[in-house]
Image 1 (cartoon, rainbow, N blue to C red):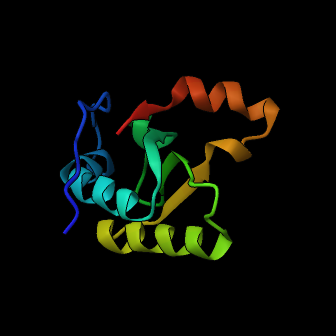
Image 2: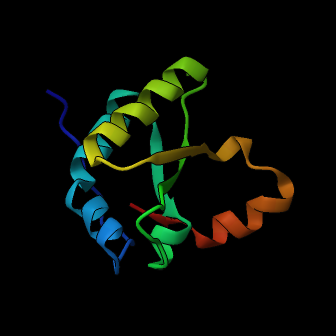
Image 3: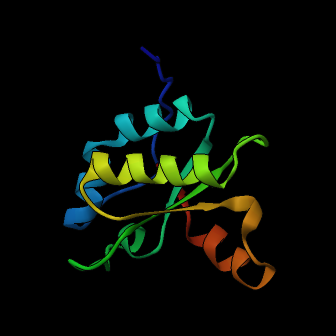
Length: 110
């Protein structure tokens, strides 16, 4: 069993998907820790409260250097199964320069 030190969240849900993410926050952070993933942040429509029934959850993360694409896909799939909704995990290091400023300004810690 992994013990997670949970810092205060900046994320304030205002939609059904946001409330679901908040409800499973500790489990999401525990899953991230098990994979060596750090600095989990929410961005996009769920963060802004503009999500719909077809939305996914966008998470910006810092990956461990040794994490490959298959491990990233496994982590993303585990989160989607946990939450019961599609999840898009975006490594912060892979942000394109023209999108980085917008995503980083929108993202808040989970």
